[in-house]
Image 1 (tube, rainbow, N blue to C red):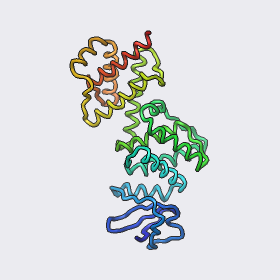
Image 2 (spheres, rainbow, N blue to C red; image 1 turned 90 degrees about the horizontal axis):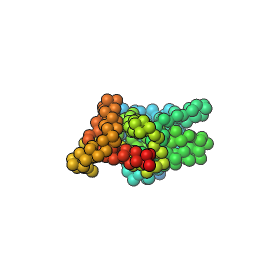
Image 3 (cartoon, helix red, strand yellow; image 1 turned 45 degrees about the horizontal axis):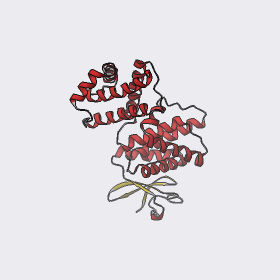
Image 4 (tube, rainbow, N blue to C red; image 1 turned 60 degrees about the vertical axis):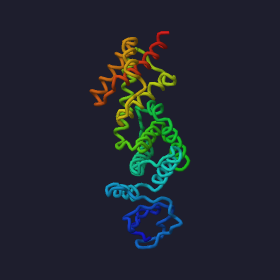
Length: 279
């Protein structure tokens, strides 16, 4: 195996019968040049990107961004895969590294990073948020930069998006914002703020997350049969009306439809919250 291109001191491109591969390894390109043999003992990761565009993008990342930013990003990704027990989408190596390097540059210049979805991210993606906290500790230890929890939230979103192969990060942000908006509608209708540390809040947020996942995958919600849905509509008329209002909003604003069985379950959560408020 010979070096075809050197991207940085720790990254090279090789060619073999399977095509081009990107290889990472500490000092793998040190004092090397094109056509030199690869030191097999230094290989840590091998990447075969599925499409040419991703390959080019990863090459650009590795050849232009600071090596310490690349290394810390790769460490975060490896930790995420170990913690989640899955091989996450390869595009994370491009998306997270590019995002993280830009964020670290902004922080170094004294700029403020704000994440308006931070509270929702903590509740909806707890495992990924813990990985973000690991990243915060790692970055502090290796780079001497203290990233805020707002940035921890963004790292968590990148990990979550790559874990479920959700494609564009924009989609994950839209879903998280949509869930936040549903909660806000419920709070406005009940004229109360739902305490984020309560079981009611976590139960509602968790159901909304799974409702979105079911809708996107086409999986039916079989938790409530038609007769139960009818009873909830009649017994909890106001709560179902609030759920319906939230459903109408997300259909209009996000082109996302919550069916009656989902709305009925949300109405049950609203009823629980409403009972606690009025007691």
